[in-house]
View 1 (cartoon, rainbow over the protein chains, first blue to last red):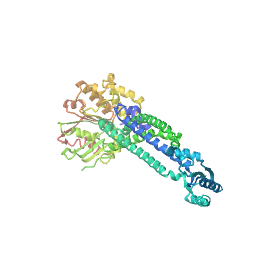
View 2: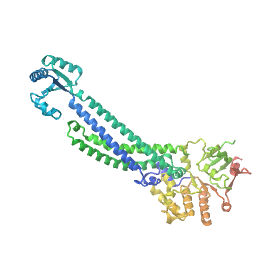
View 3: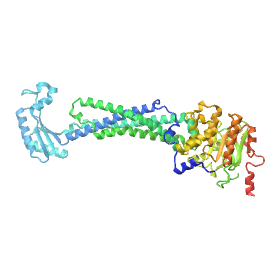
View 4: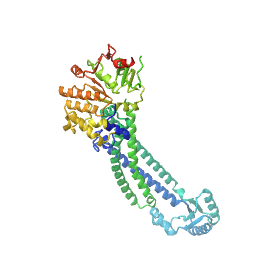
Length: 311
Length: 245
């Protein structure tokens, strides 16, 4: 028997059917009344905060590395102030002519006193004070290797026998290790939140399948395909995820902004390096997009897997 | 066992020694064999529990048999992958005994559903659905939800949904059970009109008076899961015997 003209035309156009608003009407859903948008909003907010934390830590580590790369500190550990001053001057003179040394600065005593004053008070300054090593801040071009440090030590052995040489980056090695651990923790949190989101969408999709079982059966009997039915569910979940994602991103960004202001108020040089750049904000804006894609795909695969068990 | 006549273009449905059991229970259908031809009108009768609904489930592809062979539109249903079932289902119209209207959709949207599933645009489906609503006497109730419709009105919506796509085969389970005699006759006339256009119609009914209303119809009588076919007319219909001779 020939199909009615309306169906024949639809087949000729290759329509998949049940598209748009009409398809989504098949599932009765009171949006926002259900928990799905709120669950996704919470997940996206937490993911945004974790991602912002990870990105800030990455920026902080990079800024600190850039600041400290090429930095070498020479300490003249000598109790006699006159001898200490002489060795510091001789050391600076000896180092100035070395290849690869781009800058050299003997840290003035007054600056040293200011640095240690918060810990030792006034007792640290003056002639009768606790002997504090003289410091020379040295900048080297290129990478600092143990071999280069060894060459500097050899060069200073005659001019300043009390000199100790350390790469500045070595001091902050444990700090960098801690930052790296926090970055991994942020990544792990994001992965766990994604997993929790998948589980929430999976449960919601299963529940929706159960409560709409009769409707699905009818659509099947009318010739609806698994893909058509899955599309109805994934469209519904995508809409919930969009609502939840926008709300979650807004909450997350407000939290990140407030935290950033708190950290900025610390006025610490190292923390200042942990600000977020344009690219970082763009990455944060992509968090809800990733959430929507993840939720939609989860809904699709959950529904398709369940439908495969039906005839 | 007789081989089904797959793909010869003559039969629309062929059952061959079909048996059906649910789980590990006893067979609700046993050794059912018959052939349905395009443009034929069949009444399926039998006492309650005879297996009418189970046979209809096999006909509208809601169930696969436990044994035997079924061919539909020249396709072997037993080995057919499930992703090809929707294509066959779109050639069927089904009136369920319990209507199975989607409760949150209006009468209009319930009737339009098969067309939407088939991908018909909103513009194209407005007139056929409106015409169908008028034909079943529900033109003024197009926005009504099933819960606000009477049993008879729901049955008419279910019937309209089954025939709107002008199916190759219409399967109706007690389609006149909840309507008054006048509407029952009207629905039967609708089925006949479809039948004249080439649709094979299978109507399961308890109402023996209904059988007399369609003179050219064939009777399929089920008794305790077995099809009564003393003359072999269902298994070897006269038309086919004539064609073979």
